[in-house]
Length: 129
Image (tube, rainbow, N blue to C red):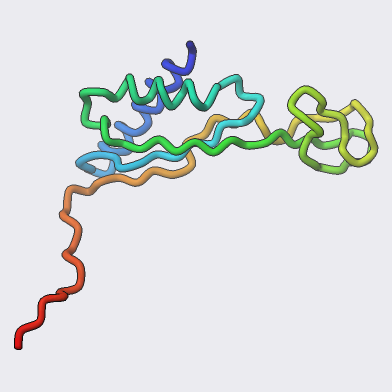
């Protein structure tokens, strides 16, 4: 299960960002995982939960966005989503000569950190009178 090593790398990235921003914690992290990256989203979610259990990141939410495969056709130059993960022919002209331009990602794209300041109270709904 290489997702555990991916989860540990995510924890390193989150921790570095927390240190850089003098943050008290991380509320959420969003990653993009390409359909061809070899990472199983459900396994990564489980590995992240296990790896953060009992740590300052235990309550951090991991959001995973799966990026579909897109190819550039070497014949007609069209860039389109692949027919399927196992069939990366050009969706326009059908040629098999394509280059994958999207779908191999494994990127942290967003992180919400806790700066340690309490949230301001909501509007005062108490009225005197």
